[in-house]
Amino acid sequence: MKVLGRPIKPNEIPGATVRHLLLLGLVVTCLFPIYFMLTTAFKPRVEFYTNVLGLPITPTLENFALVVGRDDFPRWFANSVILTSTSATIGVFISSMAAFAFARMKFAGKRYIYNLMVALMAIPVIVTIVPLFVLMVNTNLINTYPAPIIIYIGFMVPYSTFLLTNFFVDVPQSIIDCAKIDGCSSVRVYWNIVMPLSGPALMTLFMVNALWVWNELLIALIFLQSDQMKTLMAGLTVFKSRFTLNVPATCAGLTVAILPMVLLYLFGQRYFVKGLVAGALKGEID
Image (cartoon, rainbow, N blue to C red; front, top):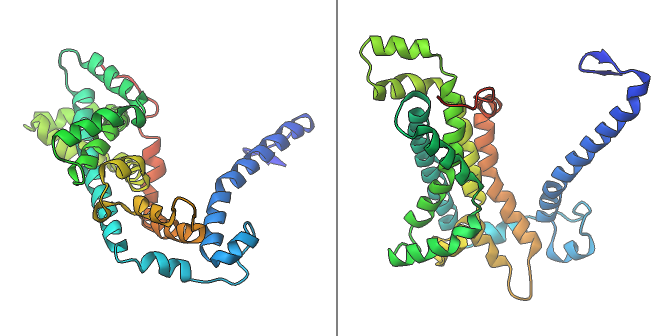
C-alpha cells in the first residue's frame, strides 16, 4: 500500500486505516442527504411512510408533477433566478472594485478599514434581521426585489472583498507598472488588466455567492412575504402545513431546485478549484 507515492510502513497501517475510515464516514455523511432526497422524490406518499430509507419500490413522477404543475412554480423559479443572478453579479463587481483599492492603491486608514471589513464576516445574518426589517418597512421595500438584493450584497461583500484582495495582491506588479508607463489610469488597469487576469477568482466567487442566495431561506421568507414574490426555496414550504408535511413532494421540489446549481458548477468547475486557492499564500496588504 502506498500513500503519496511512498510505501506505508507497518507501524503506520493502523493510523492510515483510521484516517481512511474517518474519511469514508465523512463521505457517507455528506452523500446520505442527497440519496434520501433523490430516492424519496420518486416514492409515492404512502410508500414513503413504509419504506423511508430504501429505494423506491414503485417509482413515480407524481411528486414532480405536483411541484412543477403548480401555477406559481414558474414565478418562484423566475424570482430565484432574478435574485441570484443580480445579487451575485453586483456583489462580485462591488467587491472587485473594493479589493483593487485595498490591494493596489494607497489611502489613509486603508489597513484599519480592511480589518474592519474582515471583521464583518463574523456577524451572523440572524442578528441583523430585526433592524433590517424595520429599515425595509420604513422605506416601503418589503415584497420588492431590492430588499433581499441589498441584504444579500451586504453580506457578500466582506468575504468577496477579502478573497479578491488576496488574489489581486498576487497580480505581478511589473504588468501594472508597464500599463501605467503606457498611460493607463487606475480605472483602465483595473478593468483591462486586473479583471481579465482574475477570471478564476471571479467565477469562483460568483458560484459561491449564487449558491448561497439560491438556497437562502430566512431572508426570502421575511422580506418576500407575498406568494407572487416567493423564491423557489421559500415556495417549497407550501408543502408543509401545521399538521402535515408532504415529504416526497418537498424532496421532488428540492431535486428540481438543485439542477440549476449543478449546471452552474459543471459550467464553471475548471475555474472553481483554481479560484478557491487564489491568493492563499498572501493575506497581507501594504
